[in-house]
Length: 413
Image (cartoon, rainbow, N blue to C red; front, side, top):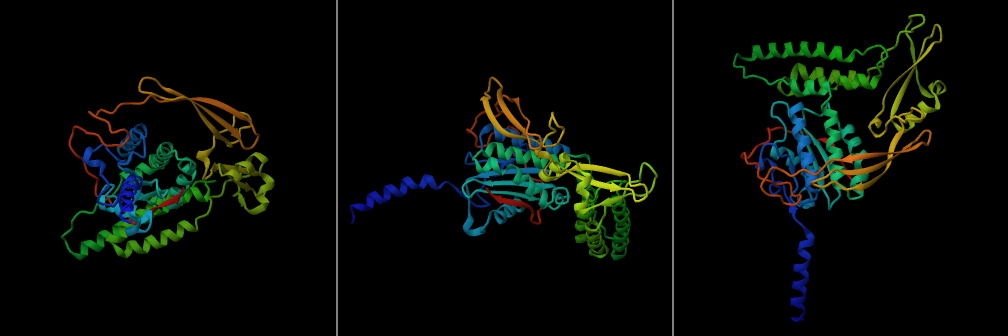
């Protein structure tokens, strides 16, 4: 029996490296200790150095344009025994570090645990309206194939870029940068209520304008343009439960029931009627129906009840980012079906990749050569082979003190 003990010890020692690090919220290295321009924690080397550099630069650019702090965590294992699931762990990490600006809670956490195959997006309270749960889920779903195939570098970069694209539009930046911070007011309860009702009037006016669409503007677009007002009133309800909470509930219901704005007929000037249900399909071409089937475009069919004139308004679908316009048939149904690296990028030369694209509608197959950017050395004095930790030379930085209420989305891949 005792002869078997040394063998068991050897087997345990050999198995330990395979377990990898199991991180708690307090043991994951904070990238801000390396400098203010560091946003990626990659202690296990799950990502390579090129991906870490691209993610850091993406977060730097995003914060400059919108004041959103996008933190990226890539580890092998987290403490599942204490937290149960990746969402609870990532949410606790978000609030422990305080990702995002304290004044408007403008933080986003992108969390990857490679061994448990978990990917999570956690959003701060101030960006939930601009980056709602359904949008976070769509961004993840579009890029899950990369993660499923083990291409964590491409997958994480594409997800981070998808988040950025939703937050750098002119409307989103205006919502984020025009945040309001309450000042201390010692004038008493009277001034408190006066100020609350002034805010109610202001938000009621803004909300009314947001809910008023332009002629032909579809219901989805109107709901999106008014989402920021709902988020802002929800935040204000913590400071002014009455009347802001009442207005928040009213506005939330109004957004759900908003309708598309009717067009004016170009022939006779009368209001046109939106045709819905199966009847509308007879007015759409096979190309337009194909776009709707894949979610790249949606089409509203308007008809004048007086002269029967028909007008079709097109707008982007929820998967428009997955498709380009086909050069042959013009349908937004041209998607990448294969990527082949012809020459890998190095530190001295750019690389090349051949992308194959196929049109879902007409079947046209085309190829394009994509130039891969040359790898870039960091300015630090040493490299850890993809760990994401380097000396910034300028001291440590810090997160802004933001908070999340649990918004976002998660997937298993």
